[in-house]
Image (cartoon, rainbow, N blue to C red; front, side):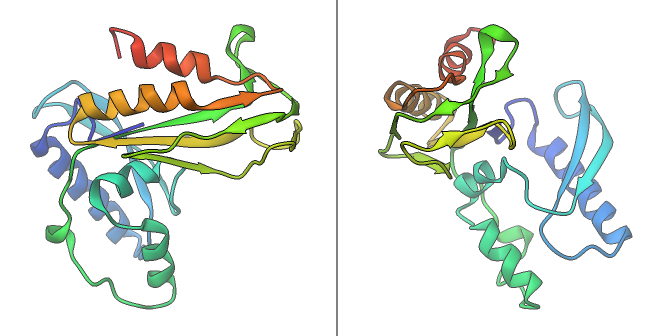
Length: 195
């Protein structure tokens, strides 16, 4: 996931935002949520189509937190408690670029089949612009009863180039042994010309 999207212009983002607010308002929704669209084209004249609305934060919400500086989980809890927001849309400014990867217990060489085993070694990266959200620890057994997500890795920089550089470094520093993961695949994506 990336924010801001490299293919969405400010004018298109404003149109999509207006549509998202209209959808939430039409059903009287009041809390954090995500409206998803399918995009047809690139640039100001691109068309978009409503896909779904999720009445919750999604796994990719940290890229928004990185570029806005807002803790969306805290804001969601405040709204649920009946507290008003201390800001409005005009107060939200994008700062830089953020990329998020999902590091999963899966084997890309086998069609991304889920992997199981014991996390014998787990070393997470750190440093400027790097964030890891995880719920696993070293020596933990990873089974097949739950989602294969081990950690979310975010990199934030002044622009996409810096965010990519930080992500590449973080992927090199991230060590998980004892179970197959998609870390090598993620490195290949970050290094691909198409990406």
